[in-house]
Amino acid sequence: MSEAKTYSGGCQCGRVRYDVRLDLTQPVISCNCSMCGRAGTLLTFVPEAAFTLRSGGEALTDYQFNKHVIHHLFCSVCGIKSFARGTGRDGGAQVAINVRCLDEVDVDKLNVHKFDGRHR
Image (cartoon, rainbow, N blue to C red; front, side):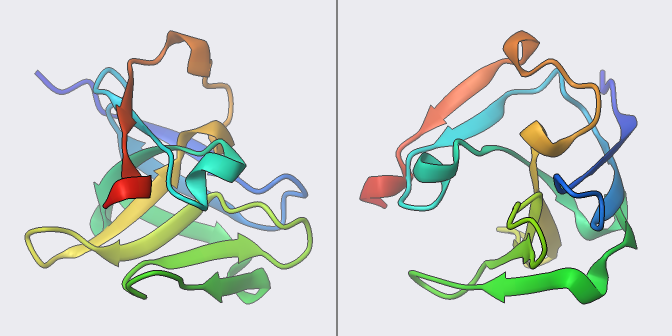
């Protein structure tokens, strides 16, 4: 049974703000790739329809690396990457949410799954 709720999140300076509907009772991913490992990102993925960018689209800068399939979007003011856009395995548009950027979420209470992105 899904326990999906709507959360608000964004960057540190507050320019980028969004709402996302997701289930944080499901595991989130701690990836050790060259980007996530350095930033300490905790990820969960949602379909594009579950994500609404409320403000800050003009402040986002796109960075791509490795296979150039994920749009790592970060705030050009404070530098925080609160979400990324890409394509899911089903071919549909998907958003990767940095759970650390969600308001009032205690990451110490989440079920964290380690993913070896460094060797993929």
